[in-house]
Amino acid sequence: MNRIFRNLRVLSYVGLTVFALVTAVGCKQTANDQAAMAGNVEVKTEVVERGDAEVVHSYTASLQGKVNVEVRAQASGYINKIVVKEGSYVKKGQALFFIDPQPYQIKLQNAEATVKAAAAALVHAQLEQDKVKSLVENKFVSPIQLQTANAALDSAKALVAQAKAAVAEARLNLSYCTVVAPVDGFLGRIPKLVGNLVTAGEAEPLTTMSDISQIYAYFSVTESDYFDLIKGSKGEQEVLPMDIELKLSNGDTYPLKGKVDMINGEFDKATNALSVRAVFENPEKLLRNGGTGIVRLVANKRDVLQIPIAATRDLQNKVFAYVLGKENQVEQRQLQIVGKNLHTYFVQGGVESGETIVTTGLDKIADGDKVQPLAPSSNKQISAVKSEEQATRDASVL
Image (cartoon, rainbow, N blue to C red; front, side):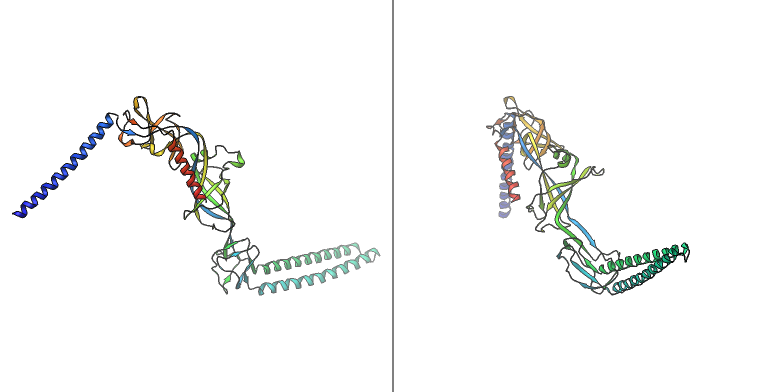
């Protein structure tokens, strides 16, 4: 029985405690509601001002080398020697592979022998033409025989030219037995080994090469962003003249800035986006073909209203702010957003310069409520936010 009484006392104590807490919360909520109705909700405010600002547009980019080529065999035969390693950096004209040259050396020797035979035949035809010409001049033979001798001489000359062309072709084919680098760059995978048979024109390349002295960053810009970015451009040659930052996949910022060097002539009908290419110098060979990154383009906004994002509310994909009116009564207004940064909206309509907006306590007030405003900050918060964003951008570049 004692145990039962003790349990009942404990349950009673817990119940009273819970009741007291619920009563306290209810009283506090009621007090807050009464304060809001009476205009006693204290809120911070600030004056909306116009000014210049920067809007950063970020896009995912794929990176490609300036030149990407497949190295293929132009001569058929067995690989005698591979003089480079996978992934190594080579210069244009440097030897990469040696293919067995013996069959091509034999063909060259045969072609050279044919040239000698054709040259001898040409000498004989020339002597015959000279002899017939002398006989015609002395009227010992008819002119028709001279025409025949001239035709034989022309044929001998053509055979010599044909034989020399065959020698040039044989030499060219022999040179193909040494496969050289077509550009400066890094080698890719080398699937063939010494002793493997290669065929001219086969589907699988001997290796691939990437010239990464410059890196192209390909990305797509939405139509609205495009028209936002081209404001202030200097004509067709500098449609997007701003410097471009590249953020690497590990979060670091590439130390060199890039420039847009190509813009597609039309928007993609499926995505309504425009393909853009930026070029980055790559002297340290830090960037590689096939990588990814994020490019950041900065658009300048001139004489725009700036409102902290924290001072707005999102309702059904629309952005609203509370404007302080007469007798400290707030009015909810929809904002026309033309851009944003990390903490700031850039506004084209909905509020006017010099008006005061509420920046805190937005969850405690509604349209038409009266509030107790603290002293306006004269846009100091916006200035602090802009300084913070600029400092963040500068720190990311260093």
